[in-house]
Length: 398
Image (cartoon, rainbow, N blue to C red; front, side, top):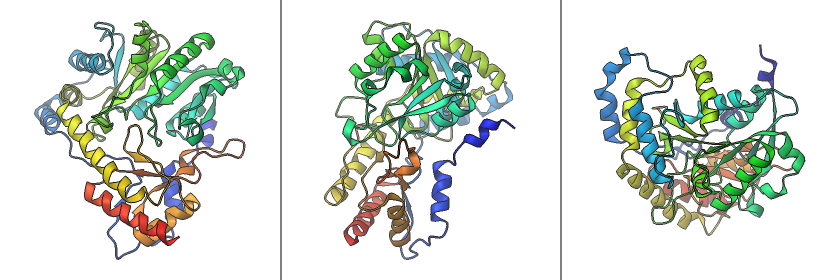
């Protein structure tokens, strides 16, 4: 077996199950789960209808590059949403459909990284654990950049030593962040692009939460948008990852895409051809319907903002918690140890959350997630309100 498999840490939810194994949830209260970021809003009818109408396409072998109409709909969406220059995206060279971004984040790392014990994959901390596992299995080391309230939950890239940038092969950014919800500003994205040029590394921007934001305010900016603003229409050294899971409440469809630098995507497409992970044709056609429609996205945004309004009104007076820039998570500080808080919340109030330390790593004795929990406001509004009242009761009892 690959010895690097032994380096993989248990996934956060494995740790959570172990933490709660001997906890009996309060049987007098109905369970409310805020632990897993699985959207619970209804999937768009037009997407489900397109999927059902094309089930006969299951008899066809899909191509790895996917249907031109899917790549065209993605290009139109990206160009409109991120203010790209018309025609800057070649649907044959700049876009690769993928089976959800989780597998793409992992496989892209395997394709782009050169196996080298001195090489680094740099990522935020806390982070999506795929970044770390992908680094280990690509034969390089992960390097973590703390995100906490001292830096607005965005890594202090200017403080990173030159020695780290020289070893960096791939920089993962997550904007909006998971679990913090912080958005990296356009100017900072452009500074990262300049660093990538100077030290010759690739930037992989995980933007899967970009469409969960307050519709009355500015939409989160993206890495390709930063490229376009600099006149970099070749998107050199830059790729972005997007998904329908959060945007369109379709986590089970497993549909997303990678877009950006054609010189990176060409060998990545070769990798995927051997990897054998083409998206089914019926899924592609359903995805076209999703990328072409914004009505369901606006409805989705409004539902999440209603949850934030209600929950923060309840918890804001008793917890150190603020509204995120985007995404559907709250990242409050806990009045007691985050693991103890999680256990007591389930035992006394039957509400499930994730300890922040499970989403982060200790570096030099500091874990930026410790003392916080992640709350995913994915349950129906009434359940989120009920959960907030129960959380408040626990906090007030401490």
